[in-house]
Length: 511
Ligand SMILES: *[C@@H]1O[C@H](CO)[C@@H](O)[C@H](O)[C@H]1NC(C)=O
Image 1 (tube, rainbow, N blue to C red):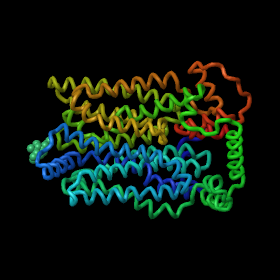
Image 2: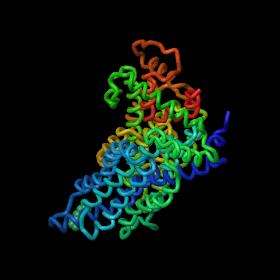
Image 3: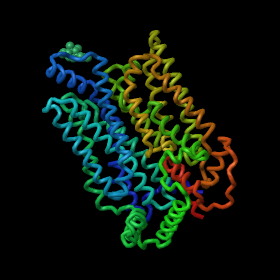
Image 4: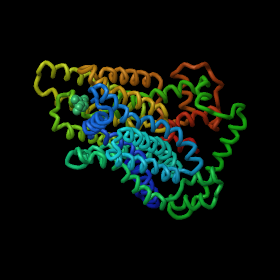
């Protein structure tokens, strides 16, 4: 079949508009997520000093180290709490304002956050930083949900995989760029930290200036707004030239089927809890939830929050830590590119399970290196550093396969790890990676037992495989490939994952 680079060539023919739209949307979307988790690491000590100073001035007493660490984890984790709220807001916003306008409106959170950060020194209030990070979190939560929706609905079927892949690459690019901007030579110095934290408004402004020129999601225009003409115009621009009438008819047909499904089922309101109560779907939802929680509980994204804590523990000289930090972003970026090629060959199942297994190995080596370093064995800090890089690289290979951008679980897990991480590193010392080792092992085993390979399978086949793997009570076998209620719900369950973004899968379903 197709070589991945052919399949993922977004620049061919009439796809230029699509490629530019993807860039414009992603720069305010998953790019922002990456950028905001990595810029917070550089100003750690400056902000802590600022908190201590303002506290001293207000109350006349200074703060102890544990209290200061707690204040810092609250600032860092306010981002995840905001993300959780944003993830909940995203759905209603996307329906009310449309995909494109939601993304544009979303930037207002970012701009208010930037104003708060820029004025916090003058106002002598560290609470404003907490609020600002909360608002930035809302921005990420909204965009990480709306962006895949916008992409998925705008891309032609055969390019959906490529578009999902772009989300991971933009995340990695955001992480890396945030670390570079956070260098002491750039914005990472004591007098400039407020500008560093406010610099996330620059991509936001770029999006505000560029995205209005691109079309709204054709599917939203047709299905939610009922505007055939606008849909045809948008499709025409995304596909280049004439609007394919066929594609519009297909959208309408899909909608009718979904409508029928809703009418036929007695409980038409499908809350996540309804999905969970269905025995057949429960195992799938559990897998999705496990995969999306493991993605954050394994600590990968918290390493970016607290990179300097890790490298200090590993014994890297303080003046070199910022360069080691950039190495983590570079690892993530390399992995995001590599994974695109691997996913074609190995499939999601093996990439996910293999990724978590490798991460388990690296955390063992990391622990051993920390112990040996305590005994004075030379060169151990660099082995530890290499382990952190390898850990991130292994995770990055599996990230697109685990990209459950929609889950509130992701944000809750990120919040809990974000609150605990520095305490884990300080408290457990040499053994600080053991909790993450447990998470990786459990994730690898759980996914190994429950997750079927999805490559080239229809939703019906995936459901069957799930049932077989989870030894469910025999359900009446469905002969047809027509979307039955279960399959429709499975589609919903899977749309939290990238299972349905498999281009082969989509093609098969349509035939
Ligand atoms: C906070 O400031 C006070 C007074 O300047 C100082 O004694 C104390 O060590 C500082 N706390 C930390 C954790 O640095």
